[in-house]
Length: 465
Image (cartoon, rainbow, N blue to C red; front, side, top):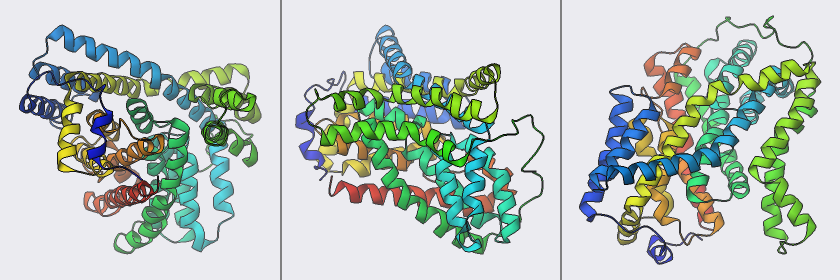
């Protein structure tokens, strides 16, 4: 069971001590977050630059010298880039292979083709979750839109009851399950176990997707009616290979890194002797970097060669995945620098003291911080980075499972109420052909339901873990 915050501070003896009086650190933290919010939402500054400005503001207002602030920021930047950046790059390569080989199309066609009209919303939620497991939200959305259009037209159910469940599956995986950038950043910042967080993330995502997907989608379809356009052809001559890998081969490729990381987590639970050969092998194979590297190498054969790609095409495919994620890598690394400045000024320790006195549940505090920053900036990644930084002082003394739940609480808060400052809001609006009001009633409400139901599931798990 999650201990109250009053029990946590004693375990945080190694936390950096505040470098200034409490009121000054509070002002520094608020000023840093305000700089990030205003820069992103008003000045339309790229989040990478906004996070640099926010980190500098925190350190300077807290009274630290500029060289000290720069040292903290660059240390955090480098550590985060090394710990998370490689995983994001490997995930992007795998995603590109899955899309260009036709494997993603094979998953969609197989699952949707075996569903009855009544079960189509549930099938679309499953498709969204599976596609969302290895893919970034935006890529998954672009990939799924032609299928959403076709299924909505053929079923006669309308675009909302079919599309919302798919979006719920995509968004839940983006917020809860590594190797997506948000969960990876929180795991890295808080020192959570990746395999255990992945397992708990899937456990949280399943009921959350059910509530915010098929159930809410059916309800939303009653007050917003949108017909699917005919702008996409599912089989365009777009230069892709004409042969797809089979459904079984594709699913094996998608689930391989998940199984490897879960195997490591299970070995840590059930095999107590670290010296046993089975434990050592599973520990190595389940290391996130090794698991994703194996998945990419295997996918080159199962998805790449399996769809008829030659070596040059596979090389171009994997290389083409990297430019698209350059911005994400810089944002994530800058977030690590921002976090390090917060940590080194002792703001995390101050927040831990405050939370101890107020006796605020850690999970609720983590969710609230992420939700507020998400509302202000529109970025789930920025919300995750900042909330993880602010909550850092409260996870010392928690068990591995409890730290994973804190990561998931932050993930739930990071998807709260997407609105006009979120690029995803406009992406969904345009693809679905909705007005701003209709987008609020469907997409924004779905994200809110997903966030709140995710928090409820996480807090329920917190009662027993």
